[in-house]
Length: 287
Image 1 (cartoon, rainbow, N blue to C red):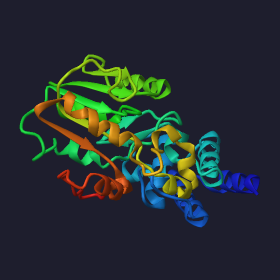
Image 2: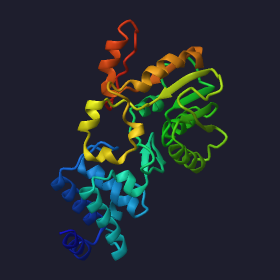
Image 3: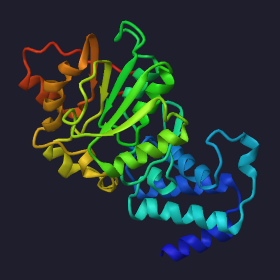
Image 4: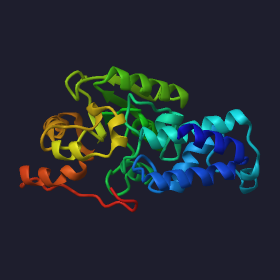
């Protein structure tokens, strides 16, 4: 059946617009899961087709009628089929993801960037910090997208990007170099705060693993391609968050702020820390 799809598509589709339309139809028919940077088949198709042609996402409208070579069509069709059959997130097929308007290299060593913390970065943490931070810590950095976005938002700050995974840090280092930020963002391997030098940060940002055991068992197949180390965090999803909350005060300045993403494990956190006056943030784009 796959060969029939490939042959038909390569022989009968000719333009970028043809490939976009065909991809949308395939995605819609397959009922794939959206959750790695898109929430609909059209955006999913755009993020697969255009990077596969080494084109930006915002090509002029008239360029969509450009005709494709046979090899270009084969490349796109094969990726669409893998997206449908293997449920591989688009970002892993193209090795491209976007966060805070910046492009990042990603592969299966790191999670696909999608944290709502990006909205806070775009707003320069307005209302949350009192002045421009000089030292920022991104704990559980993964691809380094949050650390790098913070470096763009606060060009005078020094940013430390921490992760326990050497594989993830290899991706972090690649992205730091690609963005020309080797003098502003420092990758550090550490089990949370364990191997960090004692330094005071005005801002600590963290998107740690926070998926509880029940949610892990129910995740769509797309998430099975992501490193479990970056998702799972014990029976209640708070295994790492508890350690972060316990240690963070020692690494914050007197007016420092900790921003910690906890997802659906928010319920467990409130139950376990009933006396802590957490500030729960609302996001325009959800989160």
